[in-house]
Image 1 (cartoon, rainbow over the protein chains, first blue to last red):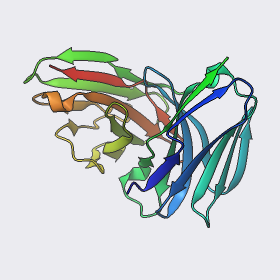
Image 2: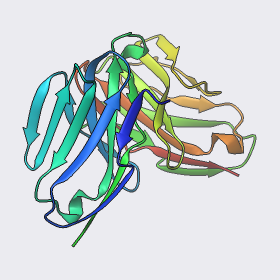
Image 3: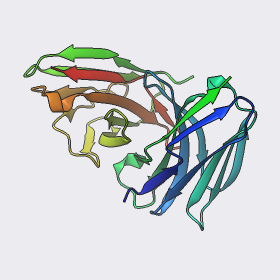
Image 4: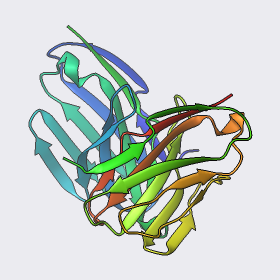
Length: 112
Length: 110
């Protein structure tokens, strides 16, 4: 079983819909990252969370440390939001110079 | 805007060739990483560095090697490429808060 599980794996929605992507993890963490990967491979960091909630534009990320769960929400979704969204954790056990452990990603397609 | 660069972006090479994937960053970060991503799969950490002259293997075993002679430069080398090395290789650096990713090198070994 992967240490980081995301759901759904694939999501197709209509423009304007409210989107939720979920991430559960099974290890102690010091931080959780939400990343966006576009076709072509480049990765952009969206959020880094250690507690609570963060908002940036139409994106909102929340984390519940006790339940080991995080969600990424997109409000008023737009076709340009189409990408792979990846949850990644920095494990508390240390090592790896804070290298991340990744989920498999959620493929999001927003149709006009 | 992150200042981390990788070259080449795409590489198709024959079996047995030696290759070096370049990664450089201009942010002065001590921590740098190499991740490998097979098509449709998650990224895995293959190498990391805490700073100059520091290199360690990551979670995923890899036949590649890395070096860190300068803070800004973290190249990855495959002495003898094989088809099993076909993958995307992503370099990243960190200020211990955020990780910044390069655009990746898509390697195909024929």
